[in-house]
Image 1 (cartoon, helix red, strand yellow):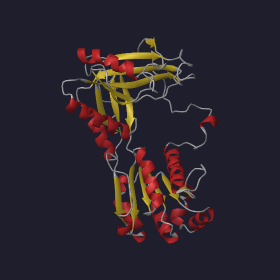
Image 2 (cartoon, rainbow, N blue to C red):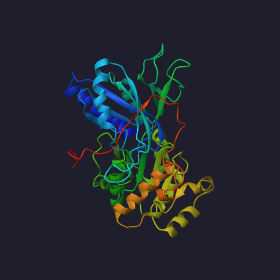
Image 3 (cartoon, rainbow, N blue to C red):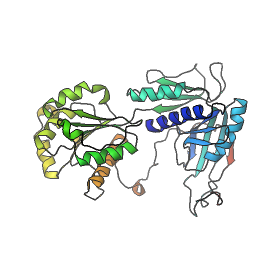
Image 4 (tube, rainbow, N blue to C red):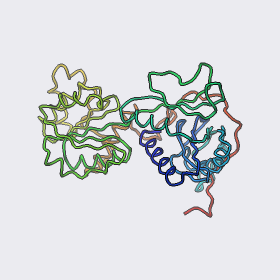
Length: 370
């Protein structure tokens, strides 16, 4: 689950608690997958004792309502349950073709009595810290089934040795720094905002920055900041806590000398992605001008920035740029999935069978379909 999804889940949980304080909440966690699955372990679903699906997703729509129905008993008893859903028999029932859920999904459903762990995970992401959300998979002296804890990356385990836990890594959101207050920056910010990224637009012209139409910040931080090209290194050093391995820097000033100053500064940071907008010839000139200290990092420069998606409008270029950042952050080539012969999602070793599976179906109820 991304940081943005986690923020949304926590916000919805708080709203539900305020709107219906007497209705208990439950949190479902996808803790293991065998075979194919739409979501991967670590996905969450928030529901309540009145069978409402409130936020999140643990499948492509196959399991949510059944899990919400089981939340009634879980909330009433106060006891978590492990449930396995066998979707291997259901390949041709959803909209007349395969559902893509050709596997077994193991779901941990537990009462959500405290928001402490969720709040700690969200706060850690805001502070650019990493950690893991831990869920107890058995009753032990140190924890009860379904108990949830958040621990920082400095800790190995939240419980005693020998206890069973499922750990879901939590990483901070991608931070996209766009240098250059242009209409292209607006388009890039809009697309990146949808993904839940943190966005900072930098320019040395305060009056131009103020004319930009950027998405509402909501839970995703968006900032307009003034920084002269000559101060690029100082500005990035000052913002070192937010320039990390999940940071991308896109240079879109349209001024060669400005891009060059920012490029030198960006290559001395741990940013995972450094891209420059412009032609291939301009990119070659920029890279050739790098000094000795920065030239060793020239392989990190994506210039021209973006994937080869076609199109030349500001929105199309922005989509290409954000897509490339996504691919680089996730160490993917950015090609067509039909050419990928390895699993689509990174997998960990499947644990032992956590619970006996029940046959589930992804077929939609035709009476409720739009």
